[in-house]
Length: 145
Image 1 (cartoon, rainbow, N blue to C red):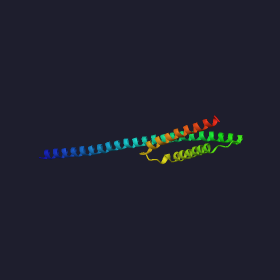
Image 2: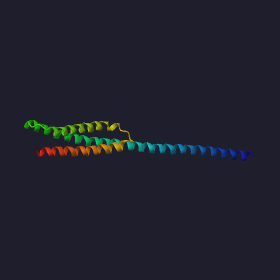
Image 3: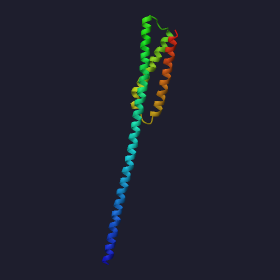
Image 4: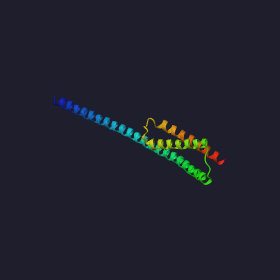
């Protein structure tokens, strides 16, 4: 009888240890999964920050090029005493406004949510390309005059 009680006690102890280890393994698996998820979130955030930084640099480069061309153009106008006609002045004023809008959006890029980032980035890249093309057309047409 004592042997049966000892065997039951040993079996119960083994089951307890096995259950305890299984729970500990589940916790370890959960921690590993959580750690992997945290790593993926960190990777995504780092990628997003890098993309924001790259986009900002590209936009700033475009804006700086425009400002440089504008300064050169305005100096030439001042030196020559020439004035822009009303239509050309409107085009130039619109370019300045577009540049200011792009600059404002560039500053706000870091505030865009992760869910809206791809659309924001795509739209801003398109605005940048349209702006560059409009600037190029304006200054090329002015060189021809």
